[in-house]
Amino acid sequence: MTLEIPVLIAGAGPVGLTLAADLAWRKVASLVVDPMIEVHPHPRAISIGVRSMEHFRRLGLEAHVINAGVPRSQALDVVYVTRMLAREIHRFRFPSIEALFAERERWARAIPEVALSPYFKTWTAQSPLERMLRDHLAGMPQVAKRYGWRVEAFTERSDHVDVTLRCEADGRRETVRTRYLAGCDGAQSAVRAGLGIEYEGRGTLGQALGIHFRAPQLMQRLGAERAVMYWILVPGCAGTIYTIDGRVDWVFNRYYTAGETAQEDDPGRLVRAAIGADIEIEIRSVQPWLPRQLVAQRYASRRVFLAGDACHLFVPTGGFGMNTGIGDAVDLAWKIAAVEHGWGGPQLLATYDAERRPVGRFNTVEAADNYAKSGDISRVPPVIEDAGPAGQAARAAVAALLPPKLKHFAPIGVHLGYHYEDSPLVVPDGTAARPFDPVSYRPTARPGHRAPHAWIDAARSTLDLFGAGFTLLRLSGAAPGADAFVNAAREASVPLSVVGLADPEIAALYERGLVLVRPDGHVAWRGDAIEDAGAVLDRARGAA
Image 1 (cartoon, rainbow, N blue to C red):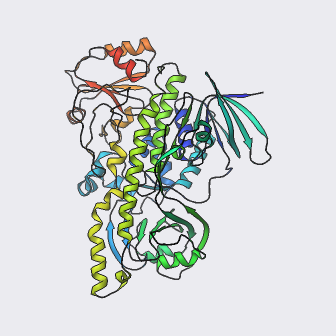
Image 2: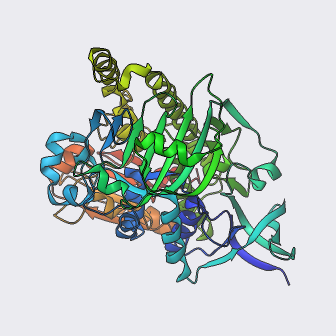
Image 3: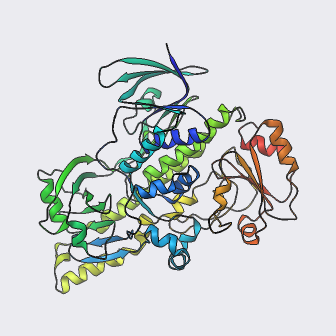
């Protein structure tokens, strides 16, 4: 007997699991398939971006994401050093979660971007995030799981997709019929291969080696001024060491510069050299990997979609990869749910590629730019360790290059500034586009952009108003009534909430009396008058 399920998700990484969680939140059932019975033991991505945290907030998972990371009291500083326990060259200071929540106004004065979201920097690694998401989904009846199985083949038909699954343990095969197949199955995606889609871009940018190790004494040796990431600059050790749990679990990503051989027979020796001390360590895993800038030529067919690494490959410089994939999952979830519930129009799912592929392309290029600049900074002379004038001069020269690297560690413009202005679902309002800055972000309610965050009271953000369906904000007493939109939504069976806010600061932020916000929190339309509410809603739901 063939199993039938609305959505089959290939891949139980952070993207596939987020997609399953968001679909369940929207009351759509799914089946998650992954060849790994347990979470991959080698840590990979690190740091949850601001926008990803806002999505997890909507799903009720923000505290779980934070608790899966370093202790809330851990400052999230990033430091450039000769070696980890040697000379500090430059420090980027970022608040701990505890400090941010307790002293938000003080930190906003020091770092203005702190005021733009309920979150700023969250240091949670991919592996603990995946374990948390698996635990979350374990109690959700809308999500079936097949860990230890993989997608072997599929056939796309006019009204469904037939998928062949294969059990890793005994080779058994099973056929599943699904209305939609989401390939969240990584760089070697079987779904992407089945669609015959190639990557394009700059390709491989270098070589790297990831070493996962435990060091029980290291955090204590770092003293009171601890950081979560250390950039090692001494020749022969260039790379980053970052903490996974704020205690004993670490990763050293060794980046090889031009002319270096990416080969290491003794990873323990390499880790101790980068630390700068012969301390106790235990090597847990070693993985060579390739920094790349690649984007799939397209993200979808009619019923099969790609998300995460299946459609874009990053250098981790900037922390964009996993977060871009989570954005893919959110965009896809609301659109599939809209169609499943009967109010999404016939063009809605086709806009997934139009909205998400430009974001993936832009973000991979930003990450590659960060990587190139990091390579320039890492080319330092051996005297950088010297105590004398030559060493001081070398360290000062590196320090002078570092302030622009803030884009690498706090790229709030990348996380919040992406938009869908050119999407067929968005109604332009004729205002001029704002110049993009990866570090600085000015909130705007211009159609296509993320609806800005503002505190309604001490605990509630405007972001908390969005998600289940469309939301119509009425921000001015002079604005037209909502009846035209309410009637149009009722006629099309579109879920619509109308929220009136009598806050002049929020009204000034959104700049129009009426603002229509999509289920993913992006603005679809805004105005001070209503000409045709039905036409606006039809366009926003892909039915125009």
